[in-house]
Length: 185
Image 1 (cartoon, rainbow, N blue to C red):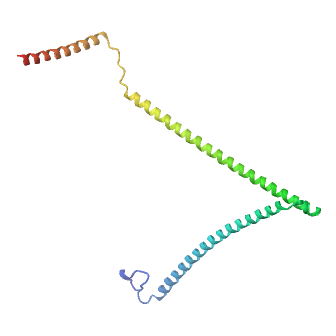
Image 2 (image 1 turned 90 degrees about the horizontal axis):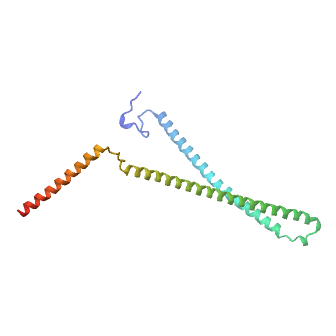
């Protein structure tokens, strides 16, 4: 058995004497390429058949519309009595078909309006919920900003507070007098 050097480990180069391995690798590459090509062809065929089906459906609808129009344009007064019943029946079928189409269209329109109204109501609910949340947040903020409520002070506490405030005022008055005396003196 021969060892493969690290520099020659790619699939394109093989050590001498491995013809079977070369052939297997080449066959595998051909198979994968063939499979990829087959997948691509199938994908292209599917696209083509879809477009053809859409074209055929459109043509069928146009032919049916032309047939209905031709049926409705037939003047029943000029037709013999035997054929008249068939054409009356045919025109009646076309009229029923038109009525069904109108009913389906009206139903779709009604469903779209209901859906639109429902979406608008949901939007309004969301907006209302957001407003409520904002109001709650602002109320919380207002509550936080309010100063804490003062407790009622006892008579003793009030008198102490008044004395403190009086001392502060007196100190301020004495300081002002000293400043005036210094400036005047």
